[in-house]
Length: 107
Length: 107
DNA sequence: TTGAAAGGCAATCATTTGGTTGCATATTTA
DNA sequence: TAAATATGCAACCAAATGATTGCCTTTCAA
Image (cartoon, rainbow over all chains, first blue to last red; front, side, top):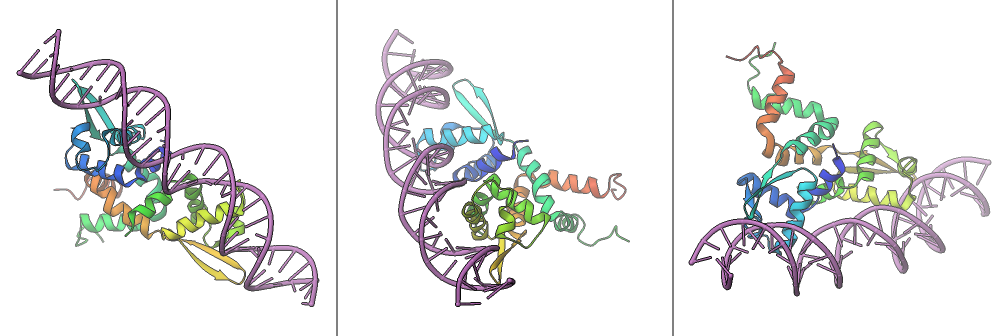
């Protein structure tokens, strides 16, 4: 619903990297997500909090660990409500091409 | 190519509104785009400059006017290289549903 | 050739942002 | 229980951001 939060969350490269890493391996805890980020644990925690607030990441407390899970819904929503608005025809054509490269069910 | 610039450009609501307005009516000059934005001409010009730098807007000088045109390519690129990465299966399913609600061409 | 219209440039300013450090809390585990 | 692990909270700071104001240039029309 809140485009603003999602767009702002996606505006930062570190946060997009965090989403990438969660996409590669979902359910990581804060410590794991910190590795290789080149910044303090608190900085990473802040980025994750912003992703959480935008509902791009969900969390589950597991003992002393906080596990992070990617949530693709907001990105999808933006794709549908925002990107399709500008390029629906082209996207549809592309999707169809991928789905059915030979066009067998046309005509 | 430069995701960073595009994401940052899209992060601001005023800039998204400008894109909306260009989508509704392409080729507007600065003065037209200023109307109803509730900020100074220079502020709007800065926003447009950021959109330009992200290649989301192209311009053409026409006499003393500067005409602005929306460019959907970068948004599309992001959709393909970024959003599909997270939700290719669901998007494909959705597209297919829309295209062929009854599933008539399935085995 | 003036004057008005459209836009550009640059300095300035408050707020937000991305990051840090230090300390506190909670949960395992030895 | 004590130490180590995993995270949370809060103050602080430099830099980026969004916006303003004042003045300058270019172009069109009377």
